[in-house]
Image (cartoon, rainbow, N blue to C red; front, side):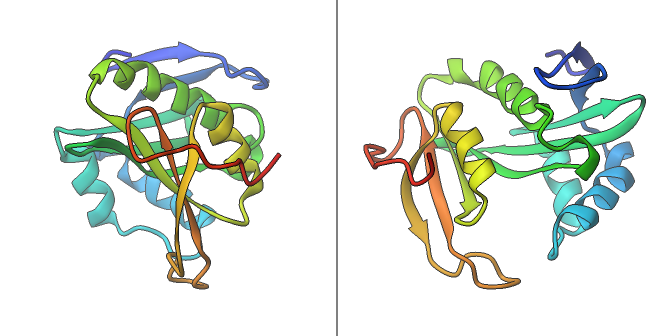
Length: 171
């Protein structure tokens, strides 16, 4: 995807989705979606820091000019780290997150020396299935990771990274 935009259609989407890199002008929409999606939302400073960082990939999925979802990915020495992903409620389970993740993976897979990692709530079975379908595998657990309710996070890896030969938790 170019730094501007690319039109695409998610597998289950009823309307065309326009993917593009997020800019600082998108912060208000990202913050609003974040507050609807999470009990403990990121701050504006956290989002602006990632959007401004040269090593980050920050994608927005737009349907009829409205932000339907976003994906924030940071580049580290040994991995691309999926930091935050959210899709607005009316657009969930229509392939929006999959489309953003597939786009990011397509752009970063050729990196060679880096794998991809993320944390996901152990109770978020739909997200775990999505990530497993994209080649992520369970690699460990972070106990009490989420600050709102101390829920554990499943650590998942795709590609180069720690031993990921662990049985999938969700089928």
